Image (cartoon, rainbow over all chains, first blue to last red):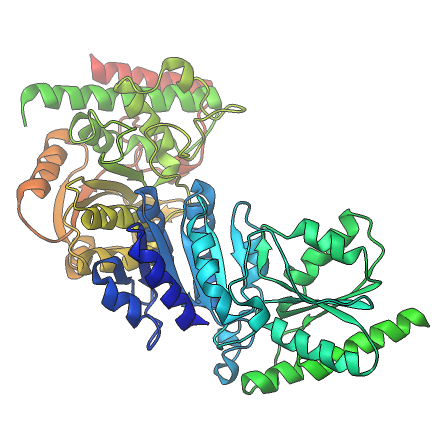
Length: 308
Length: 274
């Protein structure tokens, strides 16, 4: 998705001279299309994320719309106080771009796993938080983010993810239904939408009709879409490459509780520090219960418990 | 520097000190010594390059008070230049005020909110980079404390500004040798501070931080010397300058004054004025 992000930014920058790209010395074989097209609007800030965000604040105050790029953990957590006291506090259009969701960085290990970035970004008022589910969304996502007056956090998967139903689809404050169904809603954040679709197919084979809805606009939240969905299914299963606290599962729980909706919620995600397990992305997703077959099992179990 | 400008700077510095003493007593707050030590630095900026800065002009020079805890001194300088009224000053640290204990950008003339040390230089560096990209000749000034250089992010910004040769970025550092809980030499020794900045690729000047003429000359030199490096002016100051019982005393980072101490302080400031 990061290449698609860069291409979208190159396209957007053609007609928008406010766009500046800063990197924290990351993006090899990814950022070149931008740095070659706009060498005067590209800066390597070095491995210095705090200063990168502080500088982006200064750039944005002067009318630019800086994008700061790094691996999600380094982009979100190292400079978090700079993000809060800079673009959030001043309401400035700085865009934080984190590459890698959840355990995307596989064998690189825990320091590279973005498991709480959405939670901390979602806590900040006025911060848009966007987690595309498919590479084909990046064009509309970047265009939508670029229109914002305030700050944004964009979390992109390290993988290229193809979901034809999501191509060209994205609207801030809206969710995207991919599969219709009545028995259970599988609500997915970011690249987990791919597994959710597969899980719905596995469930269909057993006669279970599963709705699949992707949430790329975490903030502003797709509240109306979620209320409508949660009111017509008895069980919802949220899926996120993130700790289960503070991300999509929490957002859906808040929506259920605040609107007194009668819907049981199961949250699939990372429940504890993933210590003692290490491996590639697929291995990790399997170990964490996020692969399609494990999601289908979780869904079937939730439905049987409810029926019992 | 012409005599009238020096006189104006000295007048601003006197106003800063008086505002700091009066308002910190009225509001019963501390950070007094930290604000007193930068009176001449603020005066040099607001009698010099920032004297007539238009807060509504997008191409104005920018100023970041990175040591945000000295906000009251900043408000004093703005008041001296007629940019803040006495009524506004009297709201300092009150309920619902725009004059917060650390400056916030909602107030005109505050370009960036500060208060968390180590963030202002990055913002200033970004502001200077923005001017460079936009092809503007506007300047960016930041005022840091010496102990603020404990923050690693200061050096991140220092490296970037030097790498990009942001010559229109000028910072003044209040080298008063103190921090919240001790003397800088006993906490994290900063010396040799000039060598450190020089080695990071900055043009370094060292001046008496209570000599407005020297500070203004250093500011002017930075503007005209053709040196492509960013500029730092190390202003050697006395913490709490102007109130003898506060000078170089650690406790006056935090303490508010009693009525008796306020009387003594005002007496000293009035005596110095006569």
